[in-house]
Length: 215
Image (cartoon, rainbow, N blue to C red):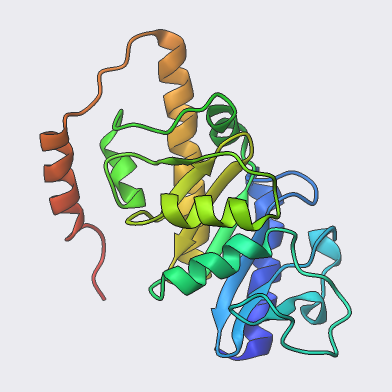
């Protein structure tokens, strides 16, 4: 994909963050791997006002790859860079503050195997990364450690992250995680939850290997 097309795609999905309810206002951020490193949304800008030139190009180490850029990257560039360095299979990262995922994260809850679709994030739960101040290398380390073997996680007292092989996959996973978080919150409100066993989740994960369309 051309650089200009990827920049526009980032803007389109950033706008979708608001429309989908995944994030309000200027919160959240999105990035995509590219030949020179990664492209990431800028900090503190209204998504509807973004132009392709506002998208920031970084090296995988976090340096600005072009001196012609006049915008600063998202304050969360640390964990975006950390994820791409640790996970060569990942080409897009979506970070958002959706209501139910954030509510769980603010009460220190991961999303356990209450529903078989939890396996969509790659494991038997959707884990939660320990709290650290936003925009720090410490938070990046927590995120990278927590995402080992997973495609998504919650961030304690913060929000959530979803990964994908492209922007569409990462965004769709973010939507799926928030839907699961909403269901889990409602189940918690009803009372005791019947969790699936490790053996049951093993079978789910095995079946997921052949789940969906193969083209």
